[in-house]
Length: 599
Image 1 (cartoon, rainbow, N blue to C red):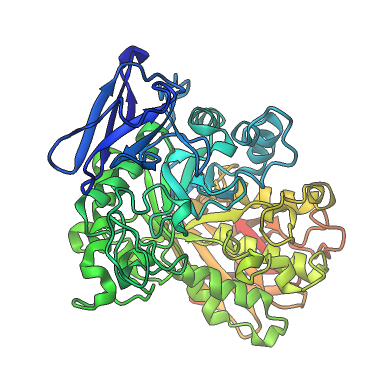
Image 2 (cartoon, rainbow, N blue to C red):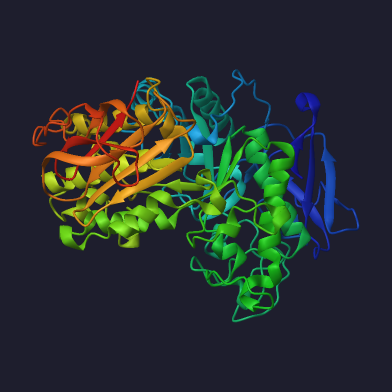
């Protein structure tokens, strides 16, 4: 499909789906934009095709449908702009690095936006180049993350966007650098040890008709409340989405399903990304984004969206089962990550609404007595289908920190207008400790690690915070290293087992993490959700013997105004407590976390 160069670059084959067209021709820079010179032949099944020997890599082109209906190729791999011309791409790339992404229980995800992550982009350097500039690679490698989640890179309207207004889902955003630069970015990321996950948007196209190549593509549409979208879209009430009135793809039409399936496989196979995050899947499986999947409910699109998502996940599992598919569904529905053979959607993991929302609520609550420890306990223990890796846990994402969504960065939400206050630093880093010590795939959003408090928008991050709050960056670095078992004494943080053995009215939380158990594996995490220091607090412990403090978030090295509360190594030689066989004393500061292990 689309425009494909012949081997050796001597000519191009064109193939397009236009079932209601009477004629299709390809016009381009190779034929002086003639609407008649190169006619495509009908295959008799709604598809049209032709070989054009004169068309070469770099040539621009459009389809002339019914003589004058000039449209950009829906399968164009590059475009001059969202409303410009398609570009014939030589999609050959000499990959330099073989890469296998880390196991899902070892992933630490860093969500980033191509345009706003870099500080300053030198002239004649593309954004994709700058993402993997040496200083940015060094920054991310020291931080310790090993998986980059890139917000959508498909061509969108204009040059500045988050990417959730896809205009051409097969084309790489031209202002970012185009397809070859994106491949080079993935290649360099792999060379530096980073897996790459890509955000994709199939719950809507557009949102407006001028923003998408497939709007009324071959001239056909059915009338419903004004102009409707044509062959790629529903042409009735099912077309409505929160992002536009008539822009939901027709998930029940086989050719549209293949269009989306081919796009999924393109990212994984041609661009070698290591997984995909599917934006708002609840609006693919349900018209109004509710969690109803009752048979016969018209909101469920006759099950078309559900079976499409199952098919997509089955196709990925068939061809590249080690690659991760991640759903943003946010309904807490365990069927999202249940196997397709059991009737589920088959996603490997999903963003966990049962973690982010109760944890953020607890952290922003100013009154200690109002903090819901039961909700925090459930956030730690939640295991969709009994599998902790079926959830992604976080306190910040692009949605949670965007001013356009009425949201704030967590430090600013804790103390509005005083995000650099002691309270903001203490409670936001307490949330970070919870993310990196709870079972699940941990994720942070760009800038979180240096106390970014400007809401996410179209402006670059405030990189001056890296110098102002270097200690906070080191706090995140230290947590990530412990999460990844950097020093071979916290293996349990990569394990799937957890026992929250204490969640008291005094706002203290303690839990045990382990994989196989034993020295170097068993980890105990103690968290204080109150503004009170405990010089000696007795907790249960799972094993007798010495326990060493590996992390104390109250250390003044992380911030000069932290109290440096004494958090000492302890010995588990006391009586059983909190349903644990032993007990010992620990010291802990206010709004602080400590991590202990043996060995």
